Length: 162
Image (tube, rainbow, N blue to C red; front, side, top):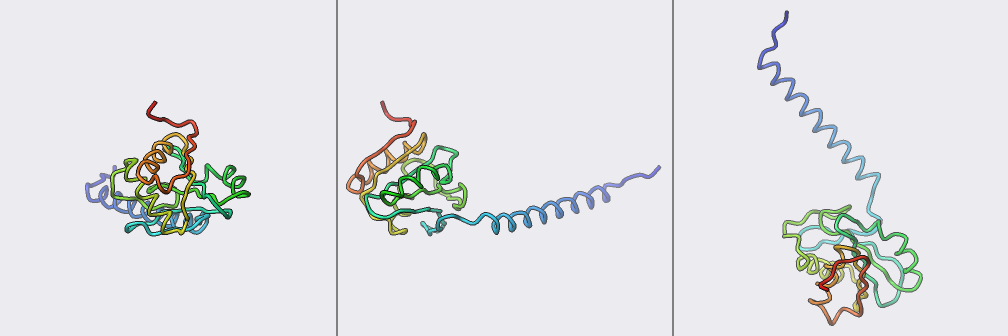
């Protein structure tokens, strides 16, 4: 009967961790190559946010998804609205192609980030803001913070103060 020593267990565990780490790294590289952003990445205060803008003209329609949603959830809406005006969907920090942010994920901070993103992406105001679910809270905050840049708000199955 063979006795397994602590050293053998430790070495086996170390080899397993290295193999899993290398596998994860390779899978991430392959995914980054296969699934490139459909829009562009814009630097916002030291990290990048993904924005996808289609169509031309104004006012620009800005779409914000629900809590766990991404810009891809708006693809059917965006393709139709872009026939009439410019429309932008984006991914909040930490979602889809956007980098994570170290700031707290409050509607106030999200509205500030969106404001910077829109300006750095050269999306001209005024905006028609469209928010689904949690995105509605963010759009209401944006409108409250930047009323001169807000033309209207559409809440889609969203929470609100009433």
